[in-house]
Length: 381
Image (cartoon, rainbow, N blue to C red; front, side):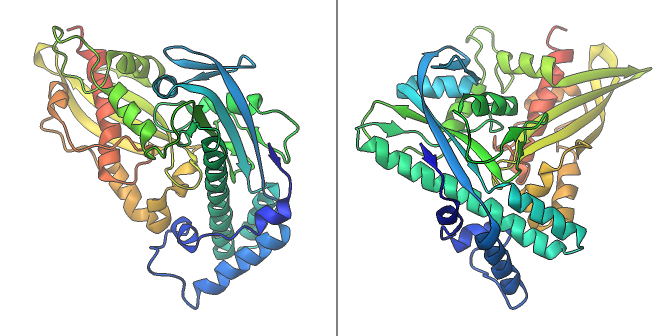
């Protein structure tokens, strides 16, 4: 189904709390005499010039394997979490949704930066992000109402870049949507979308009694699949399955030897929890030296955005206080000792959120890095 009336879409009332969140402001604070005019100016420009659009395709599911969902046109969506969630719910179709605030707003934001108007650019950026997220929510409600009328359930949205689904699958989603689209949309090599104020999402449709499922439906499955899958006899102490550890070892971990020093580089790809799930790329670095008995000593830690990453600037914590959150991200993990053997004893409260805003999500990433390193260097010793 297509929605080709940009005038109606761009005039869609935007919840104030959503706009404030994208500005990095608490919902209760509101806007003052300085920020109010900027917010109004951004809204007026967009309502006069923006060309948002939405487009969706209902794709029957041809088959569900262990790690993939195959659609009717042969498109493979590669995510074990998606496959497991679709299998459990009895998914028979997926509604693939594309939403964009349009290329015009990207062009205007670039102009404002060139004109040395950062405040105006920031407010327009936040308005376009918030509108795109709101339009996605509106489409989700429409899908729920539509399929509920036919006695079917629509699962919460799920997108590449979220935990358990590689960002590279954005290209598969875009390809499977029938064309022509109402506006331009392409997947960049990084997995991000152009125009940047755009999003792709999947709504799985199941033949079951209509119901509202928890918004963290997919995250619960991700957490469940991430736990140890070994048999009781193997007595593994890893917090993640051998399958996950082996995948991270092959795809994300690089080991470099420099004399007595071993440098480990782990590439993390994720997405922000707000601002439409902007792609994140961080590099974790661990310096190790060989100790006695075949163990390794952990000598240094570092975590920085990849030089080409811009998504971290869209994290809500970065928008609120960039310096503070980057200092927190750079802090080393609070381990029980300097031995690599000790990392399996480290069990902090953790959250699998794709961003690094909270301490629990930062510790979750460090735990993945360190247990993958342990699995790579000490599992066979």
